[in-house]
Figure 1 (cartoon, one colour):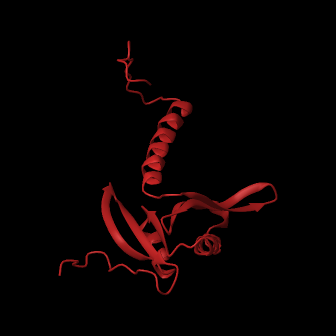
Figure 2 (figure 1 turned 45 degrees about the vertical axis):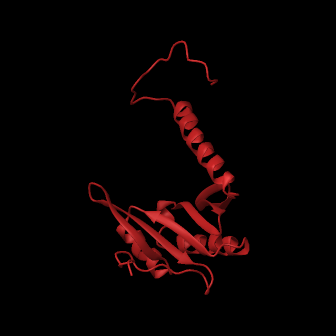
Figure 3 (figure 1 turned 180 degrees about the vertical axis):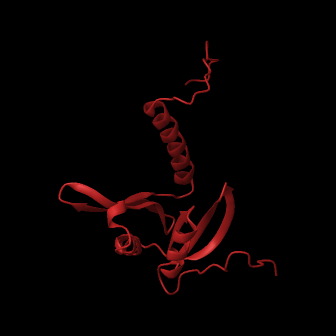
Length: 161
């Protein structure tokens, strides 16, 4: 769009927006954020770990490394394979790659209290818990990837001196 006043904007509230329209909006938000981050030195690099059985994807994780941090966007294991340690191994592998890229910590979020406990057992520390929607709470957890990495105080601690 240029700076000229649009001649005719059509507005619609929809519960049936097409996947293409939703993708355009999502991609627009991501590109805007990437542009802002790039202006302050951000250089996001995608990261994924894919687990296949034959030709079928059965588990994996996606995220990015940027500003010395691994951001885990998605961690998924197909239901029949859950409880076998695949998620733990996937997380360890993306953490190792992030460490090789120079990251000092990793951030992951979940709406699942049980998953938050698992991440804590894997070395993540809760840095925020927000009442989200209905019975869900958004847990934000951070894990140092190096012994000398910054380690946050537990959620709810008093930062004022």
